[in-house]
Amino acid sequence: MKRSAGFVLALMLVICGSSFASTAVTSSSTPVIRTSAGTISALEVRSAAPWLKIKDLAGKESILMIDPISSSAWRGGNKSAWAELKVGEMVKVRHTEKGGSAVIKTVEII
Image (cartoon, rainbow, N blue to C red; front, side, top):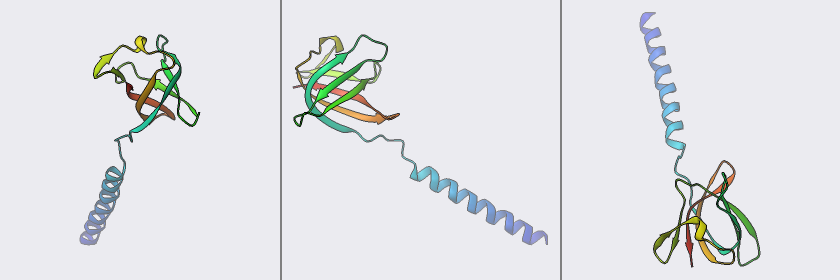
């Protein structure tokens, strides 16, 4: 009887451990990075929640959030301040999806 109880307990640990391990392996914490290109149609960089709106070549507009800590803007290979961006400039944007909105990683002024 003790032997079968020990076997059942060991079997339960193996089953629970393997399902936990498979859950940990299948969940991915690495976000997918997407690239968009277009013209800056509007921007707000001085608010508590800064954002950038770009219009692609097809005319579709997308709003992208700026993370003040991890987002960066680049002009000619040099880091640029967000306040230096202007409506009408051509940009290439690398962004991820976070909480249902697009969050900018980098903006390269073309």
